[in-house]
Length: 312
Image (cartoon, rainbow, N blue to C red; front, side):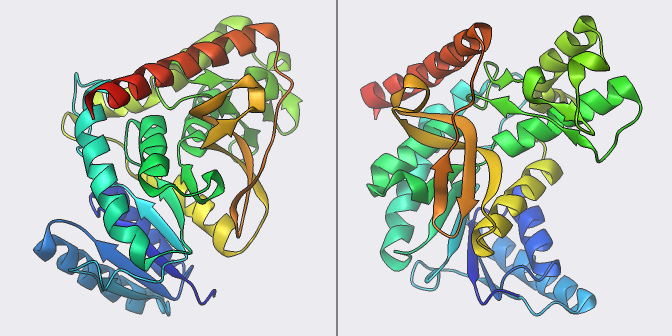
């Protein structure tokens, strides 16, 4: 096990599920939890600590009730923010969650100068942008979790169509974490076989549509709340890649600086994750239609960022 410390800000459904996953898998030596609800975060830390004893994990979980206790983290995950409710677009969350993000970043960076920050709060791309601007940190140190989740959703819908290949499906999604995300069937395979060889165009189009609405579908079914198992597990993969310096390739939300022809904008692209956070951005050779879709996705994120610039 790494002698590493992971901090989680916001222990709602995603944060607590992530904490449980990290602690019972023995993925770090210390797990620090922080939330505005002090009694709740103490209860979560106690519950998870008892789970680690059942699993014989050596991870120590602590509730932090002030900023001074939340320190020396190697990785910090921020899930804090207002949750998305039925009928609420990600855009509706924007201003409230941007204020929360700025406050959180301002509080945590003095005591955690060497941390890699993973943002999970929505609207995802705009929150990564907000965190980068509030911290003035380099872009490799603040990353958004979305692409792994969106790709996992796409893989599920591929399996639904096929009825086979579970565990052998590699799906790929780029762009912003919203309705204009860009699923990439051409870069998706089943046991190495291209989708176009095993599915009709109609089926592939349906998979793309469902992928774009994967999160909204769960929100609608739950009525109160949104997905948390898949987001939490997706985040744990990023943490593992960073703590163990695995140099894994994952789609993540990062600030672009000339890649794909864009700059000063955050979007989901394939990156190599290691001990320094984003260690490489991979530029795919996109077809013209995919470039147009990516451009549309970038434009959607720009709209949100322009709102932030005007109103905050």
